[in-house]
Structures are given as structure tokens and as C-alpha cells.
Length: 448
Image (cartoon, rainbow, N blue to C red):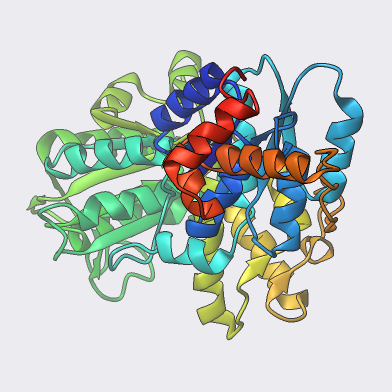
């Protein structure tokens, strides 16, 4: 994303440029409002950082011009201590937020990411699409780290333990590992251990022979056998009874099992991926989970952080989910209002990605038109996005009265617009470079 930094202090411009480029942004700079105005007429940016007080054209005047010219670019104002009234004015004109000098780089980056997230979901959908898979974890730093780990895991056939809160995407992660593995053409077989009654769980996993027990009228193939050559995903593994933990351990050790009532060993060649939102280490200490099984399962560990700890994923996850829900529900939602974005960004998401999808589905049912409003989310009200209104920039206080005053003011303005480039300024004014050099000396501008 492209950011325009406007500040008359060179050290501030260079510092901001360095900080933002380290975060992966492309940065252009301008040393005053007039120069920034010229750049904005030629190029487009995703956001701007404007100093409040600058010679020639202030940050307030630049912001007013930006809004009057209908250029939809979010702006953060950079103010010095004690400029509270000007900050309030900037927010009324349309600034999204502000930082005070000296600023904390982390706070600035956080504010910038927040305002950049208030953009068209249509664009986010484009960057939130996966390449052929119907699942997506995000695209921020934490998600990229997860993808790298999953790619390395996918090259092996080792057992995997995925941990994280409910709704963070543990099954999605398991499916991604399978789809990137050499076993991707074989079945991916999921089972929620906590959702199957204990007396049925064993037969679901191992299957049974005809006559193994009352009601077993035909042979049943278990999930171990069904997943042979592929991946068996056991969600909520912490809910597995101790009696079955012993049998699962034997399968992992011997890579074979017997159907209930069977006499023959059946070999399997499948990867076992397990997941839990419980602390298995604590369960081992309490005797609720076998230690030997824990070590067998915990060969490759994948910990998925909650959504509230990776908010940089929120915009693209939202875009991806809305695109998915549009197809499912026959809707055509394209945007979230700034107020709706504020509420989502301020929400803790105890149910993580699953809760986000539920919130969006509910809001799309009640949304009128193509934009989800804050009321459609049916969550507590978040912080306001500030009053959005356009205002005319205050007139320049050049104080020019005579022809010489006007001439001097025109030269000053042109020089500021072109950041001191005399040839460009002369070209704009329609005079020669020699003439502007003489005028600069005449008016004593070379001293300033």
C-alpha cells in the first residue's frame, strides 16, 4: 500500500519513511502542503500522514482541499503538543485519527492499519481469495508464519497436534496441510471426538465385523480404514475416554488395528492430525490424558493464535467470508460502513473466526443495499468514526496587497509546490530560470 508523508521537518519525514517501509509500505514524501497537493494531482495513495503546521499550506488546508476535491484518501494528522483545537478541527473536516509528536511508532502503525482496514470489502475479497481452496486463515504476519509451518509439515507424514481456542480454524488448518501434502488425492476424514457418544466412538473409529455385537448385522468400515492413504483428523482429542486412548496409542505405534469382533490386523498408511482447545499438558498432570499418547500426537505442533491477537487478518478474512456468504445466501454485499468497521475492530471475538462468520451472516440478512451498517451487526456500539464532512480550506494568509506582494507570494507558492526546484517553479510561472533566480535574490527569498 502507498502512503504519502507530508511534513516540513526533514528528520520527521525520513523517520516516518523508514518506519513505514520497514512495515512493508511504499512511501512518498512532501515537505509542505503545496508540494503534496501537486503530488496528489498526479498520483493516488492509500493513506496520508499530514503535519498540522506547515508553511505555505497547512495540513488543515491540505485536508480541506483533499475533501473538496472528492479524493477518498484516509488521513492521520501529526500534531505537536498543545494543538488540541486544531486537531478537533481536523477531525471535523475529515481526518480519521491523529498522533502527537513525539509519537510512538507502534501506536502510529496500529492507527494506520486500522484506517486502512476501513476500505471496500470488494477489494479485500480480491486479496482474500485462496487459490482453489475453500478455506482461508488470513494474510497477516501470524497467518503467514502458520502457512510456512504448515507447508513444512505437509512435506512429511508425521502426526500433528493443532491447538487453539474454539473457532480459530483448527480444521481449516488440518485441511490445508492435507491439501498441500503428497496424500492430497486420498481422503480427508474428519471426526469431532466430543460429538460422538462414548459407546459409539470405538465402532466409528475401528469399524466392526458382522455379529460383533447385538445389532451388528453387517460389516462396518471404520474411519481408520476409510482414511487409509490420506488424513484422519480427530478434533477435540482431549475429550477421548482413557480406555480409547490406549487403543489409539497402539494404532499410532503399530500402524495397524483390528475391527471390533475381528481377528485380522489391518495395516494403515494415513496421517493422524489431532486438535484441541484444552491444555493437554495440564490434563496429563491431572491424569486425564495419557502422557505416552500425548508425546505420540505432539510430534509437529501448530498453535493458532486467537483472532483478537492477529487483527491484521480481520479485513481480508471479512472480505473472504463475505464473498463466501454472498454465494451461499445469494446476496451482493460489497462494503462495511466505517462505523461497522470500528465496531468489528473493537470487538474481542471470543468465538474467533467462527463467530466472525456468524456475525457477518446475521448482518447480511438484515442489511439493506450493498453496505453493512453498524446496526446490522447487532453488537455493542464501537467508537465513532468521527464526523465526516467537507469543508473549504481557510484562505491563505499571504497578506499580499501590491503587485510586488502578489508577485512575491506567487513565487513563494511555486517554490513550495516544487520543494525549491527553481526550474520547475519558473516553468509553472511562465518565466525563465534566470528571471526566477533574480526575483529570489530581489525578494530575499534565498535567505529563507
